[in-house]
Image 1 (cartoon, rainbow, N blue to C red):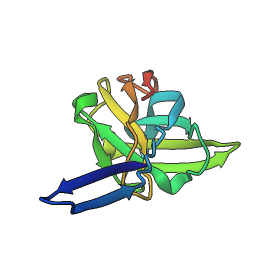
Image 2 (cartoon, rainbow, N blue to C red; image 1 turned 180 degrees about the vertical axis):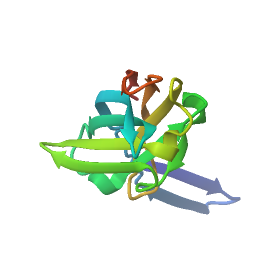
Image 3 (cartoon, one colour; image 1 turned 180 degrees about the horizontal axis):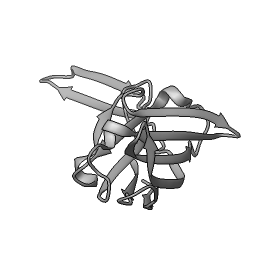
Length: 153
């Protein structure tokens, strides 16, 4: 509780006193925890397509798939921008508390043999969001598996 007391003393014996009080509740929106990350180039309709698959979970209860916000960048982690589910990102789960998110195709377009960053954050009904947990993916030039480095918030 935060309180303030203001006393004003006038001439004579008159005292005017006002009291105000309020309760402030703070929340901490937990960032998702990325458990695994796989970067790969896959053959789809005779075209090589970059793909990143993340498995992740919420560290505390009370959050569901619709609380997740997804990010990507072709220019490094500082350039992460919000992307909509269904726009090159799909998520399944939870299976025993773990979600699987797949970032593919045009979302990561032009990155074969290159690298990119993806991320996931938590949105609270208050409008507040968590920090972004992210992964830096390096894609192979040909079909196969690249590397992925996880940075949990």
